[in-house]
Image (tube, rainbow, N blue to C red; front, top):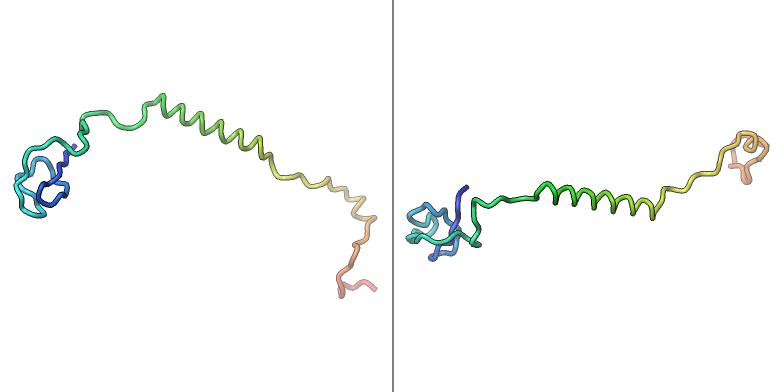
Length: 97
C-alpha cells in the first residue's frame, strides 16, 4: 500500500517515496503519513460486526412488516352474487335497452 504525505509547498498529497513534489517541485521531507494511519492495520468490519449488522437489518425489516401489515385483502368473489346483481349505472351505448 502506498502512503501519502502532504507537500509543504502546495498542500497536495504526494507519495512518501517521492523526492520532490510533482505539482510544485518542492522538496518532500520525510513525514508521518496523513492522518497518522498505520497502513498495516486491518480495515473493514469483522465477521461478528457484519453478522450483527445483518441481524439488526433483518429484525428492523420484520418489525416494519409486522407494523405495516400487508395490503388489504379484496372481498371474496362469489360468481352467484355477480350474476344476480345488475350494474348500478350501466354505461350508455353498451347495447342495453
